[in-house]
Length: 167
Image (cartoon, rainbow, N blue to C red; front, side, top):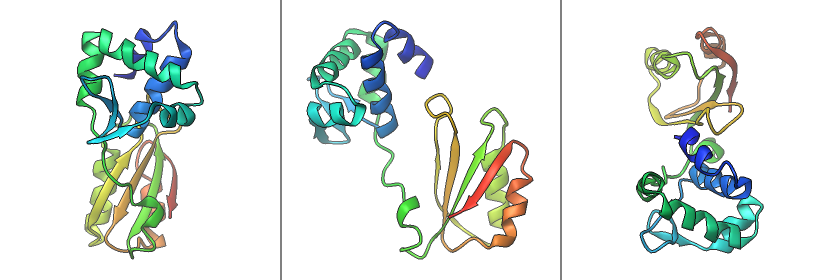
C-alpha cells in the first residue's frame, strides 16, 4: 500500500508526509474532501501541525487523493483501529509486551500468541506497526494480566525477534 501512495506523491514530499501521517493515525478522507477519523472531522490545521507542514499542504494532499481513483478508494476506506492500551495497560491491571522483529519472518504473532496461551494468559489487543511506514516495526500485545519475566527469554527465541520488552 505505502509503495503505491509514495509513488503518487514522489514529486511532492510534503504531501507524502501528510499521507504518511494520515495512514499512521488511521485518518481517511470523505467524498466531500474532509479528513476524517471515524465519524469525526479532523481540521486541516491540526493535521498540518502533526505532519509538520502548512495547512495548504493538507488541502493539496486531499485534492491529490481525491483526484486518483485508487487512492481515493484507499483513503475513503481507511478506518481508525481504536484505542491502543499500551500506555495505560498497567493502570488497567493488564500486561503488555513489545516485540521488535524482522517483519519478513512469518508466524511471529502466532508464536507469541502460542506462548501466552500455553501460559494461560489471554490476549486483549494486538497492534503491529506497518514495516513499510516504521523504521523499527514492533508488535505490541496487551494481555489480561501481567506477563511474567520468565517468558522474556522464550519470546526472544522466536525466529526473527530482535528485542523484547515487558512493559
